[in-house]
Image (cartoon, rainbow, N blue to C red):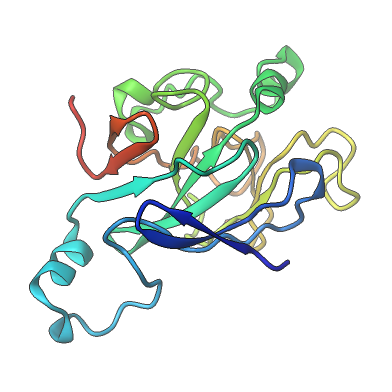
Length: 207
Ligand code: FES
């Protein structure tokens, strides 16, 4: 898939522009105000501000041009973090009783996996936007973004989610792991807060 470039804030971000039903194994690309690269050089060669970012300084993300169904990946504390703009259909599909009963922790009772303000069905401050660390809770692989409906390899009841290629763990579009998967926990939600309607800061919050 060839991601197209979008201007988000003052940075050029590579964003997956394909619609939900067309997306396959979406690989999204880094974009964040203050973060420009995935490959981090040796820390000793970094300028002070870069060292602060790697060490854990908050990262500001402007996603004003993200359209429903699109996702970008940013880097915070050296970890990939997804920002997904969910469609209303995605949110509705995740509310069905049939879907919820397939999840290991649908109500996010595992408190370590999200801040309190993201402990809700959408696991988000604003349900339209999922912000989650893109690291499988089994052994740390990066899952694939699989938003399409019922793809042949994931089955007729797949309503969109994330699939870990390492050992097959499946998560929904709120990062909630399905039952009987190798991964024991939902994906982690980092601390974050809204600066504006389409700007968040990852790594700090108002809690
Ligand atoms: S690392 Fe994801 S399933 Fe094992």
